Image (cartoon, rainbow, N blue to C red; front, side, top):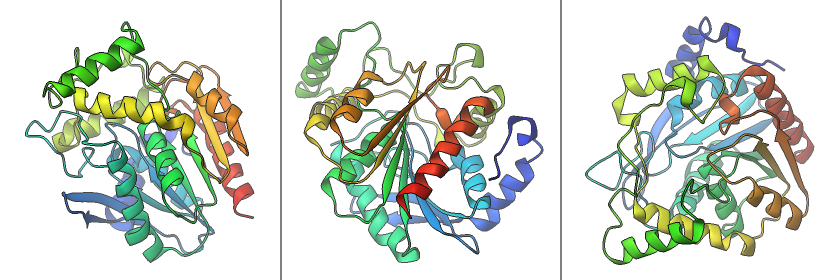
Length: 315
């Protein structure tokens, strides 16, 4: 297998950009509410398709390296920018505000993308790969819609979130009350427009080069920027989190847990693994939240596990 490395990442930027510009097919999927941006690429001899459900504040541009890497390993790749993210439509006048009317709307979009795009261009075996909020969306989708995925790989899935200094019951009460009083479009306390942290204090990755490239892409293309969450987003997300224990997925699951995660609550991942049959949970030591963008000594074992999982569920 080919693994992209930090040492060669800057010198490989021209190859990655060429892949993005000339190999990836990029387009928009129409929905009743707005357009969803997506892309796909199918190599000459693909054996499996990987469909990516990315996380909050993420979009296609952030996944260039991973898509290029997967493609070079003969995987067909499909990815969508969720509503309110990346180049897809956003609900509010202030495009930085993270908002969704119902958390279930994300899964409905993923279903439409799978039906209208993925299944139109790919009829072979496929695995659903996701990160963070995208993992919550993937789990919700698999539990509610008919599909033909052979398995799902969940990187640091958002099955519960940290509320930092605020007790969770109080955070839930504040979000529901604010929404009830008509403040669903207002930033939750402490949330602001897009503000990039310095690498030294970031909670996302310990890879300087991958963090630098992520922030550089968002600086060069302000349309990709997304700020904090609204009370409405928090309220519907807490409702989804409360429903997780009632949901069942009938295909193999692989949960990649980041040991030093400060974004999602890992205990929810262990609860899901303990109650769900045919599940592998692997914790990656010293890893921050964004496993696909971590330094090589974390990221390469993660990708090795991804490839092994894909092969095991598509025999």
